[in-house]
Each structure stands twice: as structure tokens, then as C-alpha cells.
Length: 329
Image (cartoon, rainbow, N blue to C red; front, side, top):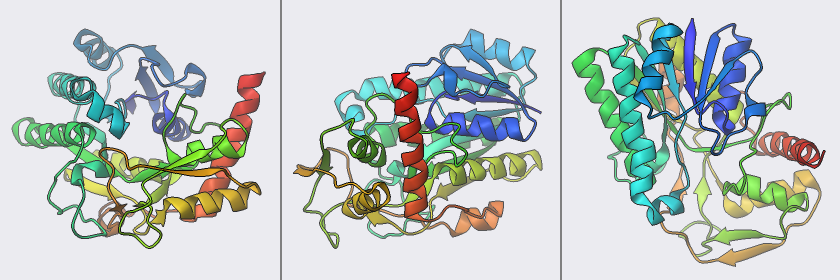
């Protein structure tokens, strides 16, 4: 089978490519390398450097490679940046996704797996958040993803495109074998920032918001290991290939950790103290975001393997240490 992975040189996409290659799939990666890395793409996959909104390129790839599934990871993901540059986010995340969906429909690609986000929910009144919670994004990032979900739903009705939209909660960790991990320059993910501080690359860790209505005043998030997230995508692929129904599913563990709890785990695993500094809240952040994860387990028979915060931190730390040696070489 032939799979097109957009954004396959990035953090989550590169892990997905490894999984697909390990499964014996024929994989084409489309990435503009704006945030990804050529070396992060598994050698057995073919990397095409280009724009996911380039319709001519998309048509050529889908026709010449016999693509039967699109896995769409490409996009901009930083909430505060989306508040500052909403039109840029709507272009990159929504307009270009429209071109990708249109190309899939025009070229008879039957299956589409979409990288969505819990940010589509905004600040829900009830936590854990179910897939039936009304969408109320608080940022252009969340809105841009919600728009793409709607386009997929409409395309499914009109053209028969089968799709699964996976709403990620907070993705963390790294490949347990140490092949890839979070490598983005200037990353804003809390765990990445904390590990850079623990390994001496940063002087301190900023905590944005210490006055939320949570037990310790900091935001609570549902951290999911990237390998478990990839496992959910693989299960989604199998579901669609078996002509399963289109679905929208949360990807999380169903419980969360506060910012300070995660930083405590980093200090325990790394054996080093962090310089933690309180800062004002960031635009678009919400107090608490935890998934109701029952539906994905039921619909896809998905079983997490790494639901342990110290395991997540340990895998990410091992990668961070390896990455710094790699960049220094």
C-alpha cells in the first residue's frame, strides 16, 4: 500500500513514517522542511521537498505513486503565534488543507487521516472532554483545525472520502529506540523546554500562568507518548482500509498532570534542579484539558503502552541528550 505523509520530517510525522516503514508500507513524505529535518525521515521513505498547498505537485504525487491514504501532519501549531498571525495560520492550516483534500478527492484517494487538536474545544466547561463536547476554539490555531475537520466531514458526505480526525492532546516523549524525537528549533512544548533547561541549553523554564483554578495554580494537560499516538494512527489506517466508518476521536490517556507536576518529573528523571520562573498567562491557553479516551479504545481497539509520565520524560531526555551530541558533532 502507498501512503502520503505530509509533514513527515517533523516531530510526530517522522515517528509515523518509521512506523509505516516498519510495517512494510510504501511511504512518500511531503515536507517543506520549514520546521522538520531531512535526517529525521526514515531512509526507506522517499522525501519530496515541497509545499502541501501546491496542487500541481499533489496531483503528480498521487497519480504517479498510487497513493491510497493521506496522513496529514503538516501545519503550524503554536497557539500564541496563531493569535499574533491568524491569517498566516488560516493559510497554512486551512487553505492548504483544502487543496490537499481536493487533490485526494480528484485523484480517487479513498482514505484520509488528519492531525487535529484538542484546541478545537476551547475552554470546555466539563473535563474530561468527550468528542461530543461543542467546539469553541479560543485561538486561530484551534479554529483553523476545526475548519479542516468540517471540510473533511463535508467531503465525506459529498464525495465518499473516508477519514479519521484525531484530536491530539499534549504529545510528548520520543521513539523508545532513540531513532527520532522532538528536534524543532525554538520549540515551545513544555517538556522540550524543560529538557533543554535540564541539559544546560536553556537557563530557566518559564511557567505561564500560576493563578488558574487548579490544585497548584498551573495548567493541567493530558500528556500522550508520541509512540502511542502513532499507534492510534496505525489503528486508524487499518480501520479505514477495512472500510470502517469515518470518525473523530480524542487521543489522550484520560488523566492529566499540571505544569509543576511535569517539571517535578523532569527533575526526578534528570536528577537536576530546574530554575523555574513564573510568568503571566499566554493568550489562547486554557486552564485544564484532559481527554475522555474511551471512544478511541472502543472504535479502534487502541491500547496505550507508555502511559507513565516518568517513562515519557525518560524517552524524551534520552533523545534530547542524543540530539545535542548530534548537533555538536
